Image (cartoon, rainbow, N blue to C red):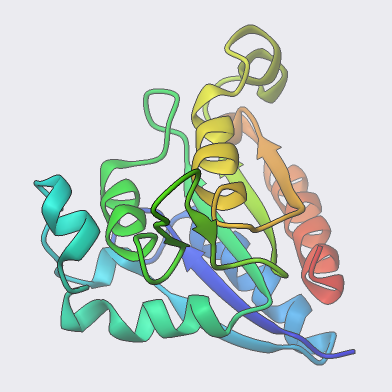
Length: 194
């Protein structure tokens, strides 16, 4: 059954010639082959302010240039977020984007008592993360803290589950054949939106 996909390509280089861009393209290609509808979001091409106060987060309006991104995420049944690991976490630009979008009224609704109500239930997600270290080192020694924070404190908190991950390590040292294998694998995941 065809589904709606929102791809958030989180590499902060707006030039578009990074491996993260190729991974997002491969997933999109697979999704189109699978009959799915694809919306793309490139935070690096959007000029938006950072949130600076709790009041802005809770009651401020999402900047106008982010409205199409917000709408694509709300309409999506599946999200793909692709980003390079920088200092163990996502790049600051992607974090700023997520803070702007995943706020009350979009990702959650505050209640008088108890935890906020999740507003993005019924959706799934995949995180594709590139890194310079071996993926096993990041997963086991560092406990994948940056990816876990996004999974648990943002996506699952908003009701998105399951959240699957693909960690690609030693990307800078990968030869062309290995990169093509990764792209083929991501394309296959895109066909099934998993």
